[in-house]
Length: 88
Image (cartoon, rainbow, N blue to C red; front, side, top):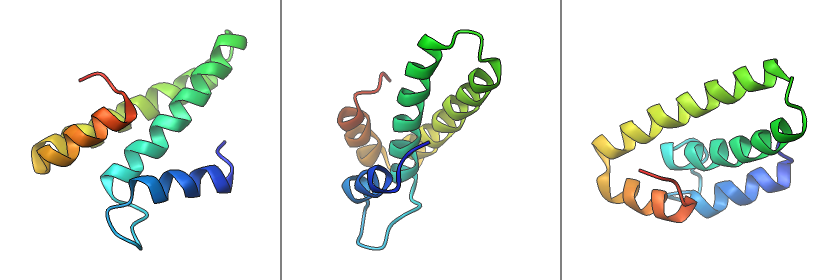
């Protein structure tokens, strides 16, 4: 679970305008942080299958958002991939 301050800083770093909280760029950035945190949790707790299922759902959601971004805003997609350090 992300703390409110961490989530707010991620939102402000990736927002496209001042009141932006739900654009695809912001959603991908928040999901990426949650995926990273959950991956670290699963390295310690190998038998936590419920969290593993949640991780797979988050990865799928991020993949769908990234494919949407690449189809609609290729420049924003490339910038986001580079900023977050994702492979594509």
